[in-house]
Length: 312
Image (cartoon, rainbow, N blue to C red; front, side, top):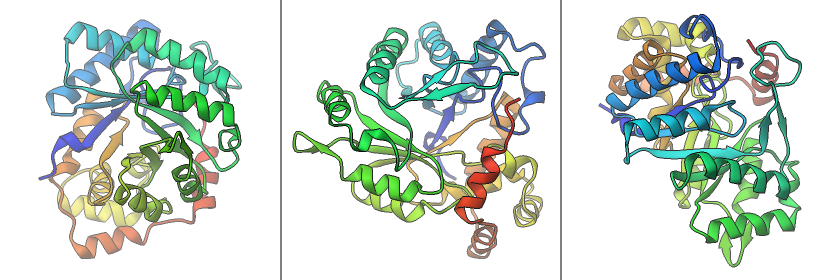
């Protein structure tokens, strides 16, 4: 039995009315007003806490996720919850579901200063890990000495820094970020990357980062819901044999990776959360692991399919 302490709750699907996750709509309130979503988020957070989950991951671009989380922490008084958040994307949809642009990415000194101030205003000193959101190999961060120095000042003030990655070149991004230093120290100490049964390409780089001392968080462990709603035949077959949902099998595949310190789930409601957490009791056999390995797609195909998912 795997401890639920290895599970983290991601708020991407809860902090704003629209997101790309499939299988989300029926789990949300009928009317996705800010007040309704705040109340709904608290219900999911309560369920996660009751189940033993003690990590919550947010971002400035997740709509009102930081605000919802700050309110919940203040109302419940929980002091044993680890909080991570991210900067780099700005939420610009103004609580609309149908809009051409939902978030805008910018890795700059100005964006870091602005968003760190916003995060601190809401979450005060509760942020345990602050991450660059969606770092890619072409990010200006790798060449921007002023931005690196600004991050180093934040690190030296006691804030633990990390990166999140996306895209087909995640492994290369992780390797480049590993080399970044300021003041004789590594700039970052944690990485949050996509790894799931369909997209395992970053596995070797994540293992190396973990072995080198970085904390590894896994995001999009269900491929934005696709592994739960439209699972490959192999995943569905194992799930039926085990008497659990396909989401539990796909998450068990992530949890068995020894380098995966925290596995993030992104349920849109408490029922989805309970189904996800069944993964902690699934012990996959070597034959089942080989079956699951066979569903992997090449990274460019996977990320092309992800980019085509509609916001809804």
